[in-house]
Image (cartoon, rainbow, N blue to C red; front, side, top):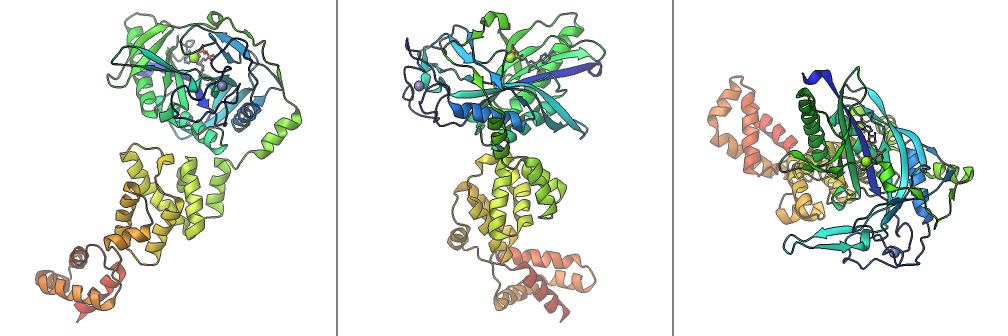
Length: 478
Ligand code: ADP
Ligand code: ZN
Ligand code: MG
């Protein structure tokens, strides 16, 4: 039954721009300050206070537009979006309505069959963030923190081109990585600087699109995927029971694994948009736009090409590294120090990715520096430690980042490469395992692996594995 229905998803992403100051005043945008300490008459809507547009906001938004293949409007403007709610002291939000800065772009992702697919971008516009409402569970009251009021946002609106929750996930991750590459947003989801409104509908393939339901302000990739899958089945179930889907705003409850109705959906006319009279129109010259285009940094596609052609990595490795700017940056920095790019890549795509996954951390959260990763690689390359000790060093780097050299000294993990010491261990193990010795001599090669394993155990993984093997072979020949 499910197969006859197709899922349709469109995403509206809000990303906080990493400008130093707010969009219409010079208050700081720094996250985490004491409530209501980064405010002024403009962002608290004192009568008579007038906004002045921060030029950096325009520059960052244009950058985002160019990086997502948009056309940049040379004539753009701001509009008032009116609504009454305690998070907006002016009772309107300054946004952009019919003349957004950027239009008609696309982001390329992979579809569920691994083929390239373009998700079209309808528009990117600039607007101000609202204040943060802190609900107090104990007293039941709500406190308003205006520090966030006036923090610059871009809203990136996709066309309804996404057809599965996995595609939505790839689109969001790609978009996040693009914004990070061009350095216009830190996209810290846990601080709310990258959040999505998720629009979901279903229809039968030969019929028009169904009515969409919207889940606002979602900021976890996992929850977004779960919420889309849940909504798809819920809507199919409704339709199958002869009910109609009504346009509404839903709330996803991660604990219950369900959506709940919040309110009927407002339409654009409810906001009574009109041009913002306190700001001038935004007029951009060709030169201005071209200068920004020329200042764009190297994008993932070009880094990928370089990794394959110049550093000899496989396409799979290059894809992995460039999937996140954090991986790509630490890879290049560590590789430039130790010159063993392949080894750095292997640490990142195996053990480091696994640990991040277990801890549910994003790659930006790698707690140690590229320098430490490079040192870890060098210690193994020089034979100071074995790769199995390397894994223990990595665990330490995650727990309490410090110089790998100090870690191995402190823990006594330096590899034993002294021939006499290793020979003593070998002789002891041979003495204790006569049966394995006879097995080996009777042609059972596997017995050697067992003996080496015992010697490694004896030395707590510190014996130089190459020397250990050679000395065993020598002794067994006797
Ligand atoms: P609003 O702000 O009222 O939600 P927007 O035009 O800003 O309206 O955003 C609409 C979003 O909904 C877009 O991302 C669009 O792709 C998506 N959308 C539109 N129609 C559908 C549909 N039938 N199913 C799923 N998503 C849709
Ligand atoms: Zn201010
Ligand atoms: Mg919406």
